[in-house]
Image (tube, rainbow, N blue to C red; front, side, top):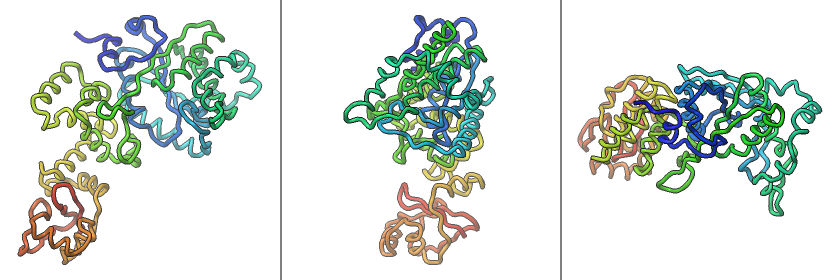
Length: 410
């Protein structure tokens, strides 16, 4: 028997704060809802992806999605959670970022029904006096001043806050008013960090139209192994854009996650059903050394974000690096994945100089020591001291020890 939406959201861990008195209200009539992302960068992160996955479940249970790119709000930047003023983006960077975010919506929600909107479209022709009369007149100052981030920024040791950032919540709040009036939106879904802004929208809808509106927020995801916010790698944020986080590194991030949180991440970041997920966890718990849960998680998330062809290329390239497959079995697109990750050097008759050029040793004498100990292999075959080095045309994989690699181009 399939779960209702409220049951699925509870099982997957998407329940945080909401204005609904009874969450089973989600299981009734079709709700038109919206979710938005500001174009403050050229890509969403896996933090945004968690909320996007929640949106997928709202859609699959029959609700109507309006996905917003914040061209107007992106011109100011959300001050909530920020200790200092943001640097304003140029109109050109906002335009580029909006297009990138819209394309990521289309990838993540491929095959789903949704409407794409940009709040710049309804703000670009609104004059300052019109905004003050239609919006500002209906927002109590006490309500705005009571916000935690405002109190922090206005405190004696705070950095202060500009009128522009102070007004951000009014702009986002009016989004709800406009979408309620023009699209019949009655619900905003968001991450927990957007609760304050979203409540401001609910209040503004009520004050301006007398209509009922609601918010549903998803919790902040915490890494159980570290107790800190989930979603950072050693290199910083994990982005959905391959130019910022390569598909290979993206896959590796999920593959290397801890055992403690992997079941939660499978529930949040994949569309696997409860029976499918429970079967995976039974097999995983029987032998955690095989990391079945992490492999399934990495595959499913990378497929969703980067597509079937790319994830298959990444998996095959990964399996070659770590011994499951032969380098010669790789196709061109799979070798290209490795080219994007590994240092690539031109072939040299001197093996030891080649190892230095490839940064697999710091000197030719160290390279000689690695060679003598049997630590060097090319295309999966160890190179003995008296063996002639035979390279095939094109790319060749050189490996030192278990985890150090480079490509040799002949």
